Image (cartoon, rainbow, N blue to C red; front, side, top):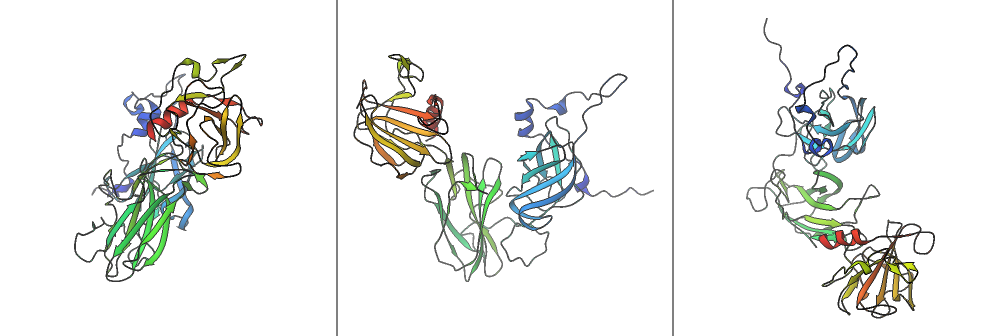
Length: 417
C-alpha cells in the first residue's frame, strides 16, 4: 500500500520559546511524562483549538490584517501562554504571539506584523501543544486594493535606492524618545515613484512584533511629504513602554513593492524606530537622592515625610514627570512654592515643592510630560536646594487619596529618561 500523503502544515512543529522559559521557570517538556496509573491522577490535557473568529480590523470572519484581534475557541485553554501563527508549510514563517486574554474555552490574540495565512497552534505553560487548527486564518498583508491571489503574502520588500521599479521611501521619526501626554511620536515620510503609490503604515511593538495601529492613506502622490502621529493609545488603551517602529509599505505604479524597513532584518536604528515612555524624570540636571532623612516616611516634627527629596543645585530645571492638568499652584510656609498636577490617565496627583519661584504654569493649565514647570529651590521649610516630590493615589492630593512612596518610580524614570 502506498504511503498516505500528509499536509506538512498539519504536523506539530517542535518549538522552545522565551514565553515558556519566563512564565514556566523551566521547560516542562524536558521533564519525564507522568502516566496515569492505579490511584494516580491523569495528566492535564493538551489545549484544543477549534474555531477562529476575527474581532477587529477584519475583512471577513477569518480574514484579518496584522494587528487585528482574533478570538479562538476550544477547550483547556486556560494555561495557554503562546499562540503560533504557522503560515505556510515549514517553520520559516512561523510567528509566535502572547495571548491578551485566556479562559477555559476562549482566548484572544493579536495578529503579529509578520504573520502569514495559515493555521494557528497553542502552547500552554507546561509545553503541551494543540494540533493546528483545521481552519486557516487569512492574513491580509498588502495595502488595499489587492489584485493578486488571496493567499499571497507580501514578498521581501525592496530597500530604498535598490534600483528597479520599486518605489523609494524616505522615512524618519521626529524624536527617538517620546512620552505619553507629551511629545507625540511623529513619522514623516516621502515616496518617490513614477505615479501615485498605494501606501499602508503600521505601528509595530518591537517586543512581540505586533502591529497595534494601522493607517491606510490609500493612493499617495509621489514627492508629497506626509506625516503620521501616534498619541500612545491603541483601541482607546494606553500602550506599555518600550521600543516601537513605524513601518511604511508602498506599492508603486508598476506594481513593485517596497518597505521603509526590511521585515526579515530590522536593524536597531530603523528609520521609524523610537522608544515610548509614560513618565519623565522631573529634574533636568545632576541630582542626588540623599540619605534617610529625605526618604518617604522619615520623621518630621510629629508627622512623617510624605514624599522623596531629590537634591540638585538651585536653578536646575524642573519638568512635569507626567502631563495632566494643574490642580494647585500656591505658596505654603513649609512647602514653599509648590505645584500639584493631576496626572493624565493615572488617577494620581504629582506634587513638586520648594520651587525657586512660583511655577511657570497656573491652575487649570494643561501640562505636557517633560514640559518645563519651574526650577529647583529651597523656599519654605527647606534645608538645601532640593525638590520634594510627592505621589498621591486616587482621588488625589488631600482629597481622599493617600501619599505613596515615590522613590521606586523616581529611580525607574531616572534610568530610562
